[in-house]
Image 1 (cartoon, rainbow, N blue to C red):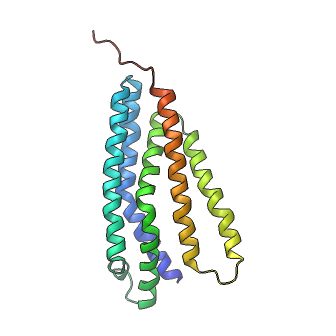
Image 2: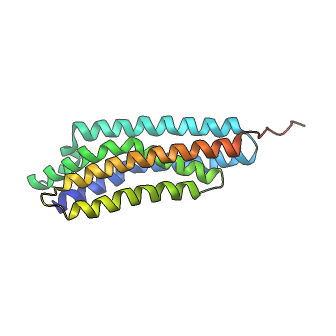
Length: 183
């Protein structure tokens, strides 16, 4: 089980790289437009990044739902390892779109000069994941999939919190900002 999970986790990390690249690009692009008092461009950067990230992560989710065995079998031919790794990817891939959204929100918080909402969002997930996971680990009949389902649920919660906090930040930081007059 551990080998399958390990391979699945590494495949997942590789899958996250394109979404992370999009999110990393958000901070400087939106930040420069924020500094230039161009709120429409900041919002357009957010829309573009969310659209690109969501489409990309949705396609990767479909791949992990359709053929996770192929992704795991590339690294191991042992049937038990492939089975566990494929199950991991099949379950955890329901996080992919949400994870891309959270990455993008974090980039926007950086662009707006306030990373506290990102910390609060991450803390929300950590607390809502760790405490139930500790409790679950003491329950008879625990299966590793229960932990993975918990991960999906807490990622969805973190996404809602991130979007809520980003909405507040956009309102506070962008409303009332006017573009500088052209000389």
